[in-house]
Image (cartoon, rainbow, N blue to C red; front, side, top):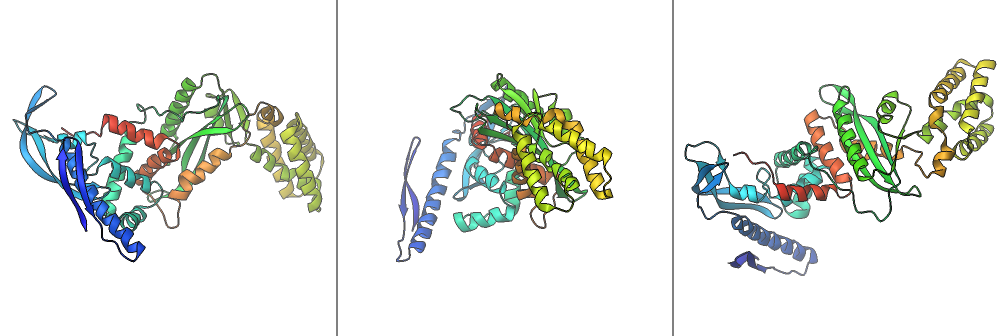
Length: 426
């Protein structure tokens, strides 16, 4: 059982693979996997050698470099570890070395690009030990946890380094984008040094003429005092989106946090208060009106929520009603405090609550996309039981995860990396 190279002619490699079959299908499949991995290692070794020079002198940045000979190096591949004898170059006066195979092969640390892609993609969804277990059990590929972490850190460093200069294109859409909803929100995660802190998520969602969401861009950031870096990144994505969809209406959707609106007002034509938050405050009014009758509270809430969503001027009418209740009636301390909070909330956001008009224009009226992103981008990966993070590690995961979760971006990133390469020190 195993594999061997039959011939190498130019860019073609011919392999012979021998597989031992068994009366157990599982055993046969395991033998197939092992033999194919052996063949993959042989083919990958040949592919790397194909990218090497013939040992002639080369010129880089006006300086001549000469080979120190073919030196062995271990590389990690999807199929196993391979040892390749490749030329290593150096200037006549010494100094740093240069390996053409690693430059041309887009080697990341010692990983081939496909294996680095697999490892970092898996780390975006699970811990390094989960990735290690998956590779060993499902790919027959034993790898150290430290290697998984270092490789993923290297990939994340490229993502962060190229964040400003690499522009990603949304998937090709069959419909015209009429509106773009922008949202941002925070959720807490546990850091080793400073305890629970707020990490940020931003979303840019594209909608067609009937209000169907077509695509969403995700941005995530580790806890940061002032959030300046996160807001700069979000602003860059907004500007790129506006260049791509200049005729769309840009809408800010968020809850009542003042900091959200300070940012969104400068980048959107319409600002909409999340309907769930607006309707949530009506519970205080229902309790004030019917303190001892739960059935009437529910009936009133259902009716008013429907009106708030479908009928113009309802928000103003509700505000006047709760203002009158607050000023003219005597209530318990708790009811009065909740009612006053509702009055203040509606007073501050009445101009963002014309939901009937927004629905007529097919605008989204909920920030559910952004709030869901808090869960999918951050909570599901960074807030599992017992997890606490150093900022650098959390930044790696968020860089990978936002790229993986934004459709087509992960593939585009690797196409760009394949085109431009991974920085190799000279």
